[in-house]
Length: 608
Image 1 (cartoon, rainbow, N blue to C red):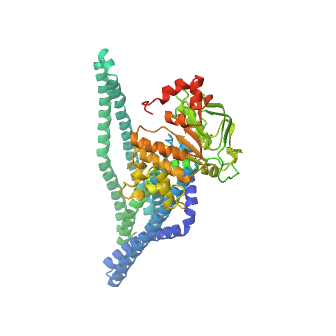
Image 2 (image 1 turned 90 degrees about the horizontal axis):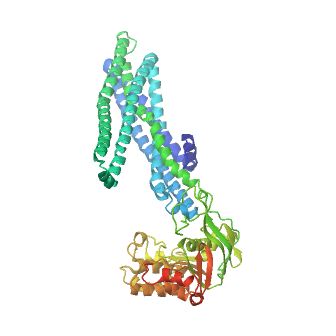
Image 3 (image 1 turned 180 degrees about the vertical axis):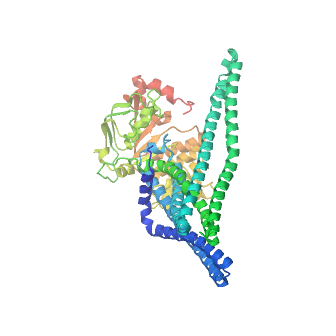
């Protein structure tokens, strides 16, 4: 994940905030207005002490009181408008980022949504954007309101007595430096204590996980000594940390008291020599006290910026990814469904996942999808596969799951072949627009997505604007889903819960079949890795599968004997190559590799 700088973050945020410059201008104006009231309050202190208390001017007191009321009214109104508008801009920033990231996520290759190890997109879109927006509003508030407040108060102080103000700033700066050194030292000790405490974990794990070796080899005393040394080191560091922490508050108090004592002494000397009035002294002290809070916030900008950079990195990372390539220029309406695979080879090269489209992570021995290992060899999944599937033909794919799944994914162009080409009705898939290609393909699997919505919305997913209730009902009926839908509390309008938690496996599968029936595409990809079901639900699923395969070019990743018996053709893949092809009965009669493979994988009770 790339590392970004503060300058990059600011430029990047400015691009997204630019459409809301008018609201941002209002917010900044209100912040500057609030900052301007601070030196005004310090000036009123001078007038109050010299004019009202010392000079006994009651008329001036009335003006000062009105001024105080006016200043706080301005602060209240400006503060409310400024806070509201800056948070409105921040909220718009969150919304825009979330939609931008979500749209980008939908356009990315599938690996980014399929357990990607480097980044959790859901967490980035939800919490990452919110934290980034909070950092933005906080930084803007500090850098505008607090900076102008500091400048205004310093200007007033230098106006009253520049020599004293300069001296006071030097003393305060020295005190702040001392306090920062103490805080930094305490923070370093906390980190070190955490690291040493973490050092206990390996000792504990070694002793517990290797207990039989410890006991057989008489290592109890050795392990006891290792644990004691680690525990004593942790104890020593914790006591140092506690000592520093207990000194932290007294040192702050002493440093602050010494600084104020020096400043007050110098001011008193000036007052006794009539170099400054009592009102001027009071005003200077008030200004210095008002400086403390904004100075602290400005001093903490670096930490806030680091937090913002940390939150921005995953957002940057996602938005910088290349979208799924769509180089096709041809759009087709409804295809006939003829598929031709010409010398298709597909292999995974670890380390190329940033450039490839969506390589499945394949274990070459098991043929199953696993996480890739960098630096490993290239693994062949398919080798020189040539196959022609006629419109409406049902082809059952058998073999290692990595090969059969890869073949199905190639047809939908979730991955691209390493060599060779696939044609649909004579068109190379690479020349077809992705939307046009995928509009002609349906996919049914036990893992087919069920959304946290109504049954009707799940069946009509993707065609909601065109599907009538009658069409949804007809699809449910054909998928043999009507019998359980009628028993639901609200029928088709029943919410199924997250990932269809309120449905069993057979019900979810029939909803997926109904979705495919409603889409009515000419090509069907069917993955039969179903969970074990009772006979009655399986009977309904069998009937639904027969309905959805009827009249469609169907590629079935077969796991059941009933499927291969009904298939027009069975294609057996071994080590990525087609070794046999024909009907179930033909392959059994040949007495080649197929019978043994069928007995091993497709016998009843195999758990598939």
